[in-house]
Image (cartoon, rainbow, N blue to C red; front, side, top):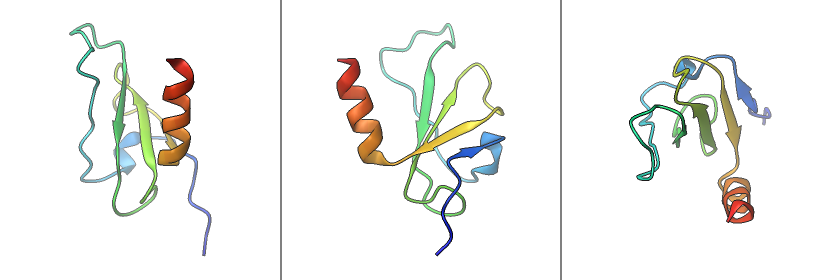
Length: 74
């Protein structure tokens, strides 16, 4: 089984995903957005992108890694 990529040069490579922002986000557009691709590159991983650059790169991480990251920030 091929190893999925860990970054995508453009988050537009993720088709039919719904990008979400934190409810704590303001309208200043200075946050990260996350999505859960179910097909294609990144299926089963969590995609993270900069809301200021929606067609820019996306980082792909396992859901467990993201949970640990967010817990460490708290």
